[in-house]
Every structure is written in C-alpha cells, then in structure tokens.
Amino acid sequence: MPSDHLLLYFQENLKIVDHWNVNGTHYALTSEAWLKNMDNHKKQVMPIIRETYGAHQQTKWFVYWRLFFIAVAEMFAWDKGNEWYVSHYLFEKPAA
Image 1 (tube, one colour):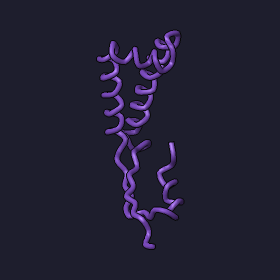
Image 2 (cartoon, helix red, strand yellow):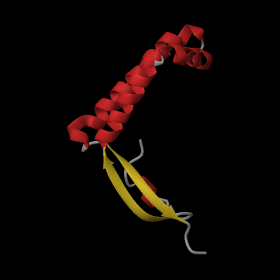
Image 3 (tube, helix red, strand yellow):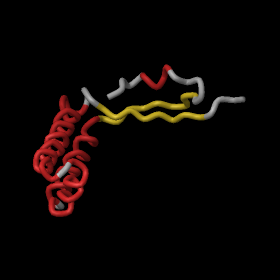
Image 4 (tube, one colour):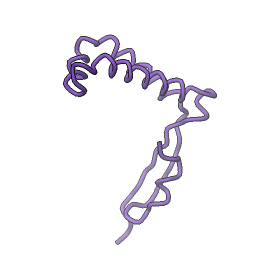
C-alpha cells in the first residue's frame, strides 16, 4: 500500500486541494462485510474463481480470498483503526 503522503510528491499534472484520513475501523468493517458476502454467495463465487484460476485451484483461491479479507479486517482494526487508515485526496488541474 502506498504511504499517506506519496501522492503529495507528484503534483505536476494535478494539484492537491485537500487531503484527509479516515480511521481504519470503517475499512475493517467493509472487509468483514466482503468476507460475509463471499461466504454467503459461495455457490455464485466458486464458478468465477474456477474460471479465473482454474478448476484445480478453486478451493485454494477461495481460501486465499477469505484469508485476505480476514487479514485486511484485522490490520485496519488494529489499535482502534489508528495504525492503518484510508487516505483521501482532492485534486484539481493546475492553472494553465
């Protein structure tokens, strides 16, 4: 993941107007909802995974995606959402 201030170094084509952060607890809840949604729709998800990764890999990749959502949820919830967070940026085109 890029650092919070990375995009601030690249303002040649776009200029920063505003920049703010959202506590990671919201994204943790989002990841938990994605996990629940995937689990609740496994019958619909498995054909997509099979088509993407192959029939011999579908169970493994289903588990990989579950682990990803669990890890993201735990990471963004860590320290009450204050360690990992979501950065937002508002850019505008620079004056010509």
